[in-house]
Image (cartoon, rainbow, N blue to C red; front, side, top):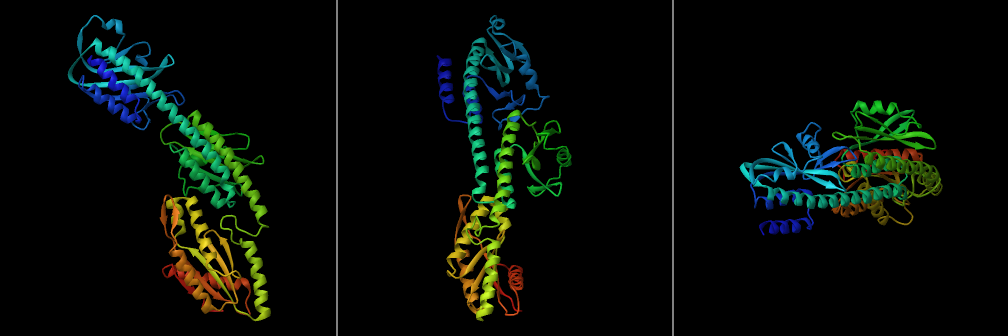
Length: 461
């Protein structure tokens, strides 16, 4: 009756929603009601990577030289390893009870070995054959539970993989500039392939340039890049711990995604995922390049919906011609989001995009219909204020600065606030557009140097 009561508790534990560490701890606590168990570990053999993993320690890989591999081999044709010796149940029927220090029992899946449950007991612990039969039943139940956990984890990974593929494909719905797209791709890959370090290189002037993250000091990666050609496909180096996956565009090698493991070899599953993600990344980057060429002739910035730089320069020439002809005032604003790089580094480029969108929306809302705002590049905005003297421009600038400062922006599940710095310049009848904005840019530099979140005016024409 005691054993039936124990198995009932085990069954209740196994049908509960718990992770593998909670499972091992729960089994140990229930076993301690019968025998003094000092330690219990459950190891699962991963056929994909040919490694043994500790199920209760984040599936960490067990080193090849560990004793558990020897125990695993000894259990291939046996029922137990007791005190480092292998036994079958019939050979144990003759004894009633015996002292035990350690016990290992196999777990099976579809008739083949799946893993090992290993127990260590307190000193002078005695067990009997009935307990061994109980442990054998228990190992079968645990094996089924772990198989379900592994299947659920794999299903979750597959869902995350398809989400990553879709998200990489969707980037170009809002962005087409490579300096924004590539970090986004890097972040998405890094989140999905979280067990490995990810690097993204683009080929520029015949050489691979690291685009994401900021640094790569592993010379073995640069050696691997030298071996890549459009025909090689991916290559593995450093005992399969470094994988270089080429980005191919129109038959040419345009870049590379590198995965580097600090512990495990890249598994067949990792390689398959990375091959597919790299292909999708190459398609996205190629489309972005194509879109960028097309959008050179468009008028709006895709992210902020403000005038793009090319359109702004056209409007600038028109406004200068008008102000010279009509002798009317014209002011220029140069605006920079303060510490924008820190936003990207802290919250990611997707959050940085949200900051840009929100700031652009606030800027536009504070301006007149006749004013001309534009995304000038990166986190910089430019604004033309026709029929406006510098004194009026300062009022507009302060209103705009305060509006941005007071607008919360929802990023990474919380609200943050950003500020802007601004430089102002009034057009002089003898200068051109480039000179006007050079003065506004110098005033912006002064605003940033003198503490940011302020408006500064160009003093000289």
